Image (cartoon, rainbow, N blue to C red; front, side):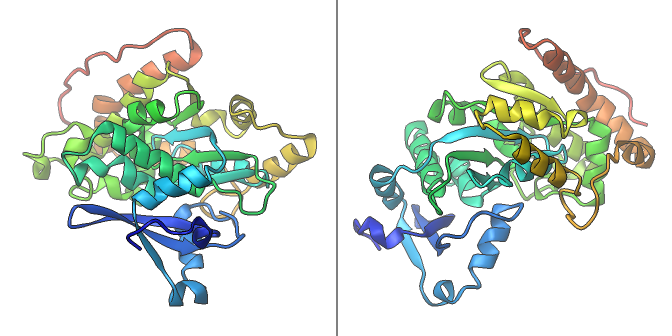
Length: 342
């Protein structure tokens, strides 16, 4: 489809991938019908939908400009709130609690949103204005009403997308957002139990996290992990005064009520009870009860993890705590002091 199409042809379809073909960005679409984003992650919903016969037999692939045409014809629901996080800090629990209410559309770590935010890596000539438009178009396409009762759109971003806050805020300057973070040792222990892709050298260019590519292979895994996480902590800290709310993992699940209020999501007493019932389940394993595992993670931390967290992360964590306790204070991240290797 390389020409303007009838927008009705895309009713019930969602964009699932943005990719480049000879420097031209193209969009893959998947038929979703009136189904909802009922899974914890966007990718899980897509995997389920791709097994449908309609998606096995028919596929839409369009130039990215079609997203813009659809945005003009059917802008969808504007976002009510954004969720950023340092990884393993309770963002899945928060998003699941908000998603349980049928009036909320919850988009969780959608690959096509991430692709628009990092599109500059594929095209050095891409202007900020055009990239911002692509991002707004993608949000619009994913924020369409599916049943008809949806009123709010909340987006949970991939953890590294907090580095794109300036562009995101330019696109949606009035949308409130939160940054979830956690004690660095607990995050690192969780990551070394099962590491996310961004913490494996080579998956995402280390320069994206402010590191020089040279010498990356010489870094110990714990130091690389800590330095990536430090970039996320620093971004949340640096931008929080611009419409953001800082939430520590230990404030959950009760902090969800403050988050809901900040996002303008009104909850009845019955809905709060339903949300708290979900909060008692483990966010990554719904069959298991949710338990605060902070003590267990502290016990599992080895000496190298503690050194890396102390060297790169705890000064930022302490600044985040200070800024959370004193919202009127704009923190200035201090220079991290070099410490001896264990």
